[in-house]
Image (cartoon, rainbow over all chains, first blue to last red; front, side, top):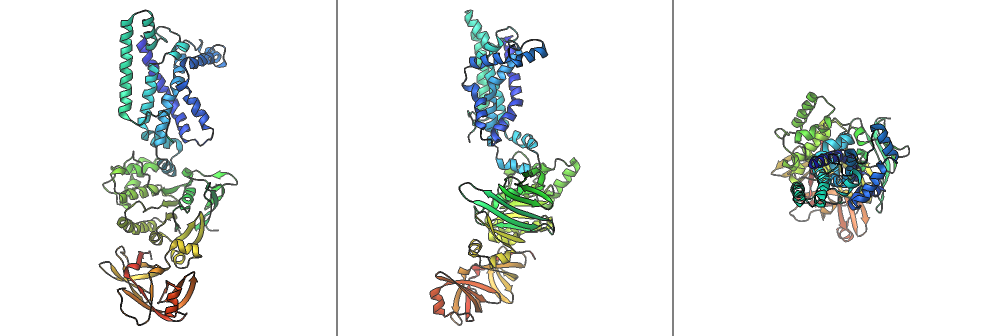
Length: 221
Length: 363
């Protein structure tokens, strides 16, 4: 059950990030705004912030005392914290840099002269993005999706803070392992841990084999 | 006022200079304007301003009745909206697309059948048959250049912008293709702006030349005029060819061509010349002046004529001799005294055949 929840969460997280991360990465790569670094730093925050801190703020932000949380429970009928949807939102924020940074690094590698050539051929910026930039960045896009997937598989602190530990809804594999160990069921923990290890290693093998350059923390300028 | 492309703008290059270019190009009949100058003179920047890829800080760019740029009223027409054909220096072919894919890239608003038809036309026009499905990396330099040209003209642009169209090619290919490019530009009948730093290319391709230095246009005029009558010492130094006259090749014997210039016969190197109409280009420092009646030399050309003008420039003197056409030679003050040159004195100008450059011209 925990495995199903985990995979569902990881797939949805990287799926949403593929949609949300692309415009953010595009903006970060091509904007000439001089205060751009402020946004860059915000996007990178989850890399350095303790998951409990991030989880705490998300919990407060989506809780019944915040406008966002109140709005959500008014519309949907139940509050966001300690549900799968709340957990998904937290995962997306927590994995944001793991998707956006490889995307931005890939966009940055695209020769500007090709983009300019496309513009002069009458092709709009949006169409140039999908017809030229995306096909030239596939390795980086796959890397971003895979890394955010793998990162979500292993998250613990944020899940505990925002999702709680609800069997079938928010109990993920990493929390399951913790529970097994607390219950002194080392055999069960070992089995799950090994699975997570194997999946994570497999995912990284895929990323490294596909593109050895993309594991950059931030695009080279 | 007849339709024209007019440019009057300033662009600031922090720490270098402020480029201030003024330019007018009548659009009807379409002409080929050459932006000529040393590297770093701002030619490419001016071309990119015309393409809408860079923005001048001040001034206007007007194309016919459309304002492309007006800094004062904050008008900045996007490159997409200008309907131009732009070919950057290294072609910038899309590596993810085939040759046909590159050519049809800008044609997505045409219906499929019309698009295929146009691609076929361009493949034929630029002799790319059989390469439709090749990727740009599989092509030679000359083929890449032709694909880039096909892509640039596919949408029937109202202005064609070519940045050093031949510089990425090796020398033999370059001189062969410059003639072909001239023929193509004439056939296309589109107003064009071509950036080059190569004087032979400028003469072959251009109807009008604008000489640039430090972001400013120093002189605009017909190619022959600019080369043989530079407006000032700066332009003279940039063009570096003091004699440019029109001639006709009357015989070509294994690359040693015989050219007739206003009744005077010259021998020159004509390996790259196919047609008969040429520009005859001679650097002043390649011309030797001798007293009439002195001995034989290895030089193939001995032209006798009277001195019509002498311009002292420091230790050197530029002497113009009338050999049926005005020929410029540069000699030292000492040589001038030894030869006793005065306006009217008759001298023999000796020029090696290798110093007589023949550049094809359109008639």
